[in-house]
Amino acid sequence: MIGFVAAVVASLTCAVCGPPLRGAPAPASALECFGESGEQRIVRFAGGTAQADDELKGAREDLATITAEIVAAARVPLVPPAGSPENEPKPKGSARGSPKRVSAVTALRPKLEALAQSAATLRLMQIVTSAPDAERMDVAQEYLTHAAFARALALIVDPGAEDAAKVQRVARLLIRERSAAVDAAPELAAAVSVVCDAPIMAQVNENLASGCGALPVFDHFCRNERSLTFGVRDVPSEAWVFVVDVAAPEAEMQWALQRFAKLQDIGALYDEVEYDTDHLEKGTPKKVTQAGWNLPNILKHGGVCADQAYFCATVSKSLGAPAAVTVGRDGSVSHAWIGYAMRGRGGPSWAEWGRFGGYAGVEGMIVHPQTGKSVSSTLMPMLTEYGRTPPADRRVVAGLRIAAGEAKSVDDALELARVGLQIGVTDSRTWDVIARAAASGKMTDAQKKQWSDDVITLCGDAYPEFAWRMIEPMIASIPSVEERVRVLDHFAQVFSARGDIVGQILMQEARAFEAAGDMASAGRCYDRIVSDYPNDGPCAFDAALAGVRILRTQGNMIGLIQFAQRAFHNMNPPNGISPIFARQTNWYRCGAMLVDALRAAGQSQQADLIQTQMDSVMK
Image 1 (cartoon, rainbow, N blue to C red):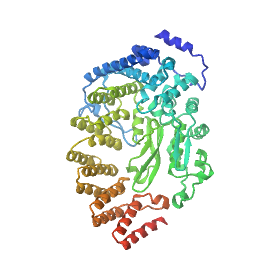
Image 2 (cartoon, one colour):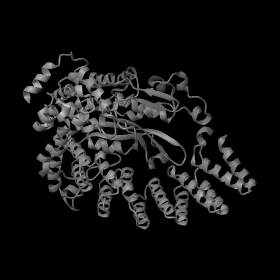
Image 3 (tube, rainbow, N blue to C red):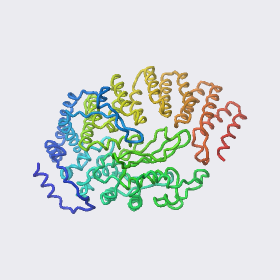
Image 4 (cartoon, rainbow, N blue to C red):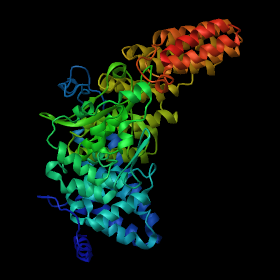
């Protein structure tokens, strides 16, 4: 196959455009990335439709064979026994802590590396499938010539969640126009391919930010390699995804780089953007919107929290550091803050700025650039920790994740995920394998118990929001309401320090009781939320709505009014914000519900008193 690849290289006659990276190492060969059998399969697969199906089937069989060998040999616990060296805690590496150390399955190393090659081969063939039949051989030749990029792309793309044809169009554009740079920065090129396959846009309140396209973004980071926070070669593609989604023109990215390249802590810029208090308190138009919304003007005229977070995230991304605008809601209104990676003595760490007051105790949400889905912000510190994993190990973890998706049984998928987590315990996409297995309803009670214990042990302290989101589908799949409530009560104790999570747990209990027709028990759960956790996130108002619904259905107007009064008086009223924002608070919405209930019961005088109290906050 060496002769074939050499011939392919010789056949590429287009000029290499774009900025080359300095001192780039020799690119990995197709043999190294996919193995001899994988390289041959890819060529035969692309050679004609008559044998494509057979080769795709053969690739699956290759992966299944290695998978069976690994599953048979890997029956080891994810969490080492108490007292073993592997179970000693890591030194604290960030403000949110680090999960406990777990050991890799070293005896399986040769098989694991073969599995990674086999998984990459199968996934690359699935990507090539999206090309027209007449172009498949050309596509395969391009990928095998740029094998390191092809491997990085194969191990990050998710054909079930994104359009492989759109991803491939960007990948081929990069190969055609930036051939040498793609070889030097394969992880960056892979991230650009899966993120810039659609226009990059960010809605920041009334303003819309847009990206500058795949080639300008790729060029920016290659051209400015020496000025970037983490360089180009040391960042995994999973982290690059949260860099290349920068929603700003190329000129503004360059402005940010030139102005802030030497800044030690990007988060400090959050406070450098002056808060537009007139907009918050009086509802007047924002100064920056009137002046023209862009990075320099945000710094000059200020804005609200969304503008502050967007500014910091965009500057951070322009400097090559992963960042995410994070949004959370306490008992009052939504708030945006910034999460970002920063360089430290011990390597990269994750930091946050602008997460003050009650928002420190509620879950933040971010948009994943590759999928467009809203996910917990705890993904980011986990990803930063995962980025410390050696590249070869990350490829093995990705291979195991792909193999788990192809596994014939839930048991095999779970075992492959277990091996992957022993190597990279903070890889959230491997944990997703467990979540999908739980949602399928095919996990046994023993498996649910083991995995819920494992996630609490490994991630509960450092990443409680993530741990709860992992456990939630396992509990939801328990058919017995009595058992489900018992388990939920247990985890309410586990997460007792986080009122927002306890509120979500109580909401699950209430819904389980409602589904079983036990409205009295459901009502007690809703009442507990508005009484004990009235200001811990948005679930308090959801509980108030649900409690009122049950009491109205029962015709219990006295109980309804008493319940609504309890909820209203327990919630904190807004302070120092304009009526536009005050009307969004749990307190105001619950007050409006109480006023309606009082008027419906003929208690107009009491309703007027509550309305007057609410109106006084609007002034």
